[in-house]
Image (cartoon, rainbow, N blue to C red; front, side):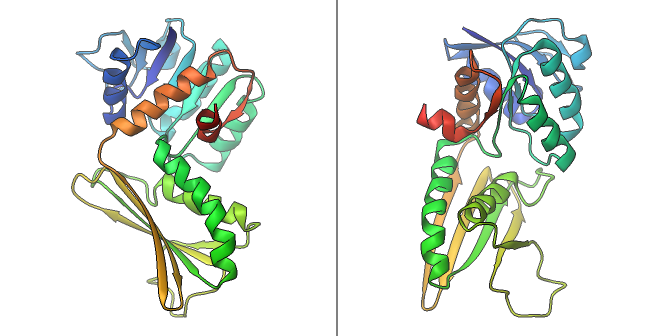
Length: 252
């Protein structure tokens, strides 16, 4: 059985993953790290990584950018794998994760769901065809009113997948209100909606002359992200150091 440390165990996703792990014989949460703390956890919870003394195979990180540095330092010190699901990381933190992958197996994804990662593949196939035909591209993401970062990491990942397929020709526009100009040809517009209890909706629109193609992914429960994180954690067991993605998990 894979032994995991849940970073951010007091958060929504931390609690979801804890519950899912209890139903999965292939993995168990043996410790949690969270400044908030959890009174009803079935495992020991530490307020920081420097206090954690429980052996594990992998860290599942659903915390915050503020907690990232201590998490990855601990993973490197203990030589254990890390599944990084935290969004809003700064460029320097992403660089540090890349450097860490030379010593330990790491997997980072802005979205752990199977559906989103399949959508990324579809976008890579669709973008060259539709862009060549003159279609404009817009992304609209919707999330609950407690989400702090905008746009979502998933929206950026969708845009990046399109840009990767198009040799980086696109720039991103996040807010059109300061602009007084028509839409530029090589741009992807990314818009954010925050309200209620929306788990996550991502729409990618290819708008051409007299026709629109729309691809949508709707998350009805956080469980889809938790299941993906647990699958990724099990996938990393025994892997060589490297930078892995959910596409590697999907392809086996």
